[in-house]
Image (cartoon, rainbow, N blue to C red; front, top):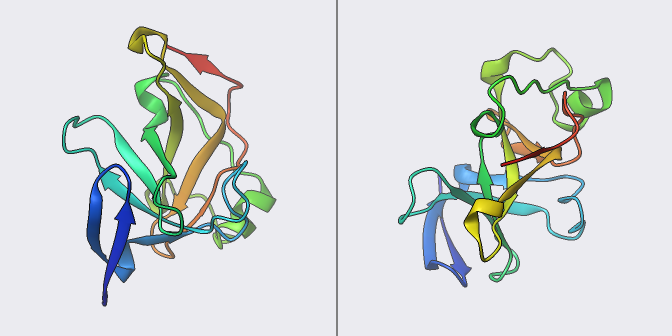
Length: 141
């Protein structure tokens, strides 16, 4: 495992292991050219994490687990979703983690989560997709 330095605009220079990198073969929805990210904990907030681009220091998305917005959240992965995540063998819940990209306006009580395009990460292969099919259409909190 090699150490990788990533420059970020939010956290400065961050060092992580190459095994921590997450590859989006199809890019992130709306950012198709960005393929490599790392998931960083927010040092000032234990609930949020940041999906930080390894290619563009200014691009980082705040993320939360979707269950924090909707306790009964169900992620329904299609055959295409499974293939894009190299998980054609099945959908064992322990094989992946899902996150929603959060929008935090000036008034944090108006925060929303993008439940239509959750980020799903194949933990073992460190591959991810952001165009998977969620079990529900949207959720605001």
